[in-house]
Length: 233
Image 1 (cartoon, rainbow, N blue to C red):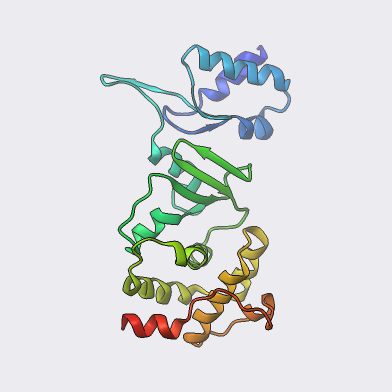
Image 2 (cartoon, rainbow, N blue to C red):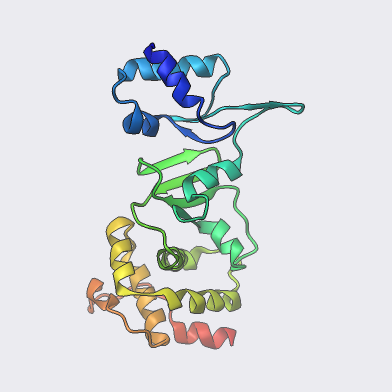
């Protein structure tokens, strides 16, 4: 059996519109095939219309129907990078803010952290993927959402502070020093974001050791929970 046939047979195990990561397939299952031959076969399949290129190294098998030629949608891309049960990644940014009714603004671009991606940053159509090699359990997901919110709180347009407090109060139920340490090693956050997190945890009397990441002599641009809470309640 020729190398090209092996590559085609592997690609054809994927369903129509399913995301195909060429690099991941090669490194995980087809490294015995010369790399140049592998990518030439992928290119040939694309030219022949068997594959559709969505981004560099990312493809799908198009679906031909009565409405014409269809390619992977936002839904397929998110399912691939977030996982079938949402355990491979998390949405952040304005799509997340809109989900929790923190703002009425809705961005066309969706930003996510994912442990599926092998590249630090990648954009597939309107989805921006940031690499994060962590297990996305409920605690990690909530903390990533909270930290992203705190990192951008001063720039969120039309922020609904009442809903923001509800969001914060729900998220801190999942806080742990262990989860924070894991996220700081993998994602990393600004000192001002950690200062805001400390302000939040102090306000709700949640035990933590966030202070060890901060300099007591520095003035960080952190939120003041007392003022925040008084304004909305």
